[in-house]
Amino acid sequence: MAPQDALLGWDEDTTAEAYAAFTRDFPMYGATSRDLARRAHLTDSRLVVDLCGGAGATAEAILALVPAEARVISLDNAAAMQRVGRRTVTDPRLSWVTARAEDLAEHVPGLADAVVCNSAIWKTDVPAVFAAVRSVLRPGGHFVFNIGGGFAGVAHPDEQTGRTGPSLNALIHQVAAREYGYTPSPAANAHPKLPLEAVTEHLATAGLTVLDTEVTAQHITMAEKKAWLSIPVFARPSGDFTHDQRMAILKKAYALTTPEAPTVTSWLVVVAQRPGE
Image (cartoon, rainbow, N blue to C red; front, side, top):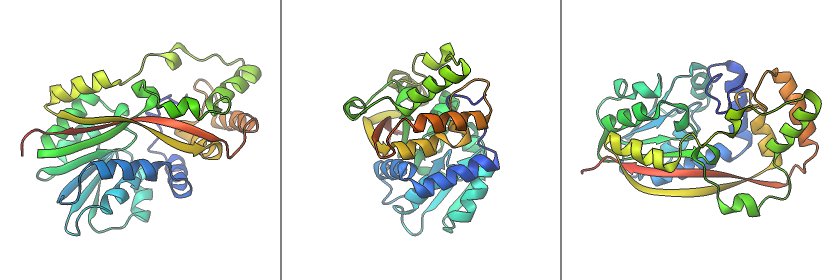
């Protein structure tokens, strides 16, 4: 069973290679990485942490903005993702640490100017990670992260106005229901996993202050969405399906769309800070 929020499966070579291929071929992770890096005020940074850094897409965006003498640590618990990243991101300023996000404080020498986390914070023990981030940030340091709209319970207006037909996820469920008798589990329709109210509360408990929040929209095509859903950890639907079955369902659902048709995904972006300077 593939978890709906892709908690498992990252430390597998097939997933790591598919993810890396996706980031090379499509702009989604590069765009979100650059957005977060820009918000982290990295111009004068000396040490930055790429939290849950995967194969290094966000580290690349950070490296493009930090000074020549800065250090960047990319921390992730999936060795397979980092093996791919080491082949493609070879900047000598970058160090790779294989560890859980919750154990961040054990692996950061000194205090960091910023911690950036792209597309992953909701997969962690959030209160523990926020506390760890606070412990490694210098006073005045920034913590910038995003949360998928579905997990945050937010939707950008473009998500509705830009839609020209059923979403690919909806079509996948239709095909699965027709051909396999699929019925979504109650968990698939649960309340948002990490809404802004909970984020704000967890940050305050950890001793971090919210500076800014924004709901952003990312405009992609059906072709990009199909490629993303082909990555094993993101494949749909959930339940007792093999990956081959999920890919067969995806192929039939995608055939009902127009490849260049626009689709919009929403993100909640949060900028927080350790108080003091």
